Length: 493
Image 1 (tube, helix red, strand yellow):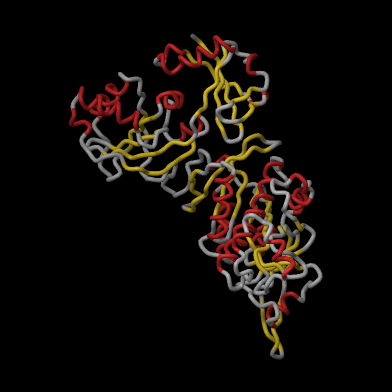
Image 2: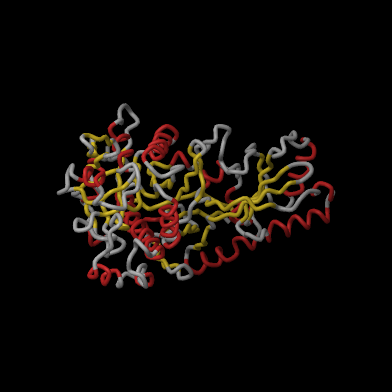
């Protein structure tokens, strides 16, 4: 039987629909998928291609064919997460992509082959776990050397012959041919690929091979490990899976998001080697030189100035003061500030977001004030250095941080065809050494993520409360960034 296949991705779930007609008429209405608790809008279905059920074992399509007879269409859930193993044999190395972490289907076939063919072909060590990857499309699969994507989906695993990681020559063609023939008797098409590194899709230069990474136009940058952990936790809570890619030997964790104007987009998440302006600038230069980035958004936590901001406020400044240049005169600190702006159009898009539509209604966004970048942490605003720096614009500076000036410097250097829009969104996690007032502590007691950490309500002394405020401040900033990314046009420059 010939069936027409349609794909839809809804709330992080990949669904495949089957009908007898090319128009997919029976899919053109809202369909409830109770097992996932989601509804698939008619417009989400995209045509994928044709499949002949006779090309696969009967049990693969039996349920779908019965559903088509009963309802006019069939739907199945397509796995997106696969577990990657390396299988080191004496004759070659094999990479295994498996839907099942226990390799149940693969091992069943392997044991059957060992009993029926030359057992010496399978001498070697057991399978070694490498990592988890998310494979959402045929193109992504092909970039990993998987040339039988549909077969992998219905079989539950796929094998790729690799060059030997030890550096020995590839196995003899006759042996390769025999292995391939034996597996093919059971419907397993085996690919031949030449990736030698344990990291997927990484080439000799240390950069991603372009599959997946070339899709990434939007990057989220965090400056501290605590911020990275908070963003990862938020992604997990939202059900957004991550997969690793490489940007000039730096790890980028890529996740996918639905954009109202561009469809599904890929977003990279990256961390500099160390905190501070210089390392952040180095990372921004790497993104510019080794990716297809159009937008870079710094997300994280910052210190607020008490009386001008409140704990957990989210600040997105247009103007950032660089106050890292400091001298002395007549025994006093002299600051030579440099003011710069992030991308004005990107900033305007954030400022224009309807606040009532934020994912978390408790978020309070400030977009009309300014921040100052210091070269090191400030925990005493009464110190002469801090006072000298804040005197540049006491009325409008509401917060302090350590990396923002790297963004404005990169923004000012935009020229030619490689224009990248930079933006900073940070949540207020502390008051630079000051304790919150009693009224604010009572307010914090109503916030689920904070209320259980107030046994000592002074974040300057309680490391538990300090960490909770850092996580929540970063989470709120990240949610604002996600709201922006969902609305972002293809280019805002």
